[in-house]
Image (cartoon, rainbow, N blue to C red):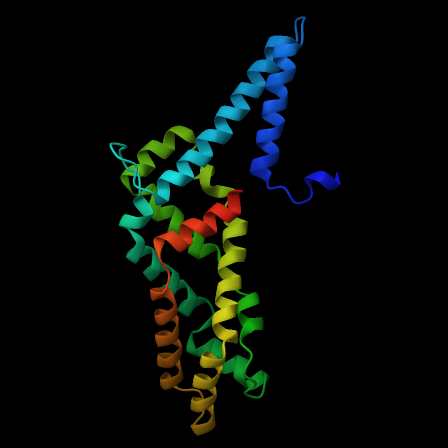
Length: 215
């Protein structure tokens, strides 16, 4: 239906569960209680998931294990960088790409074809290995985070495309290509640029990213 087109899955779930609660309260007969309990169960699950995601990024006073992403943020960024360099900025892949494109400065297709699942796996592992992982196990463990895999990968891929499409990035690569064939100097430049952009990333920015995914 058109009215649900721009709604997130979380919002649709909330609306459906609240509707079931309303129907269950208003209905009479043998089906009233099952409908009510179904609505209550669905709503409590939706709220629990959203609270759990909030707790990943925000320290909640006196709440055991909250704020795990902030505490492990440097490790998380390191995992993302390692994935990026191994996935599509290793020497073999860049050499083949520049040869086929005749040194055309357009790395976006390479990024678009890359698998970003390892980045999400790094996030998921950081969470599950933390104190918060013990609490998350009560609500489905890693499966509770799985719905974020695809939208997280899309958002991260979009961010990396912006990096390689930036004028600064292209000028740096162009400078090295103009003076020599692909060599370790270019890989160092790519590594430095990726590091610089990741250093601009903050827990708050990732928090906002995940907020966009679930709302």
